[in-house]
Length: 274
Image 1 (spheres, rainbow, N blue to C red):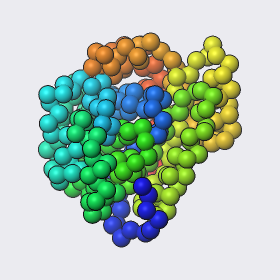
Image 2 (cartoon, helix red, strand yellow):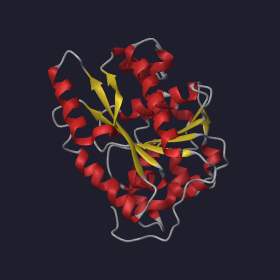
Image 3 (cartoon, rainbow, N blue to C red):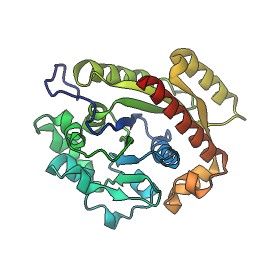
Image 4 (cartoon, one colour):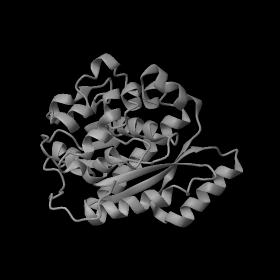
């Protein structure tokens, strides 16, 4: 989907000052949505104002934040394809400081509709550029693919956060993703950087998890967060209650891990701003 050409579209940091971070992995089932909603919750708990954009047609982030399907008529699909002002699509969540632009099944056809639109890779960037300055962070939960929806997210973002499952094939798809990020930075969005890689579904009882973690760190060095997200039954239970695990059970290991991850993310953001 990435055109090999330079664009004039002046991709710049948002006038609102919000930092835009895409949570991306083209492989499903790696903890991407779980990371997006719990990182957003943890940042909000640290008195940061956060907007989470659910860019996945499955709408799991919306469900995980307790947004019923009946409340998703104003969604990210309308923003991308119908030029709905982004401010009008924002929905409050149960977490103070955390808002969401929900997804719906309408978004499943957006990839096809975007193909013939002008500046198709810049639709989300243009929408966000018109926002007022009410957020510190905008997190984008991307679909498990590298199509036009994910490309829109990368073009609109300052940084990328990659959840990586601790399994044997963890590094196989990562090289393709890193190459895509490099090409987007070169041709479409020169400000795009990798915020970090977070290891998910880590099981300390399993030698494979330790081996994968060591392998990933040897390849990517300090791009890998020190925090690892453990396999934790409370993380799995939380979405069925429409709550982030930090709200569902703040004391469980999974919730504590996401709190530590938020601390690392903010520390890296401060170092970038210095």
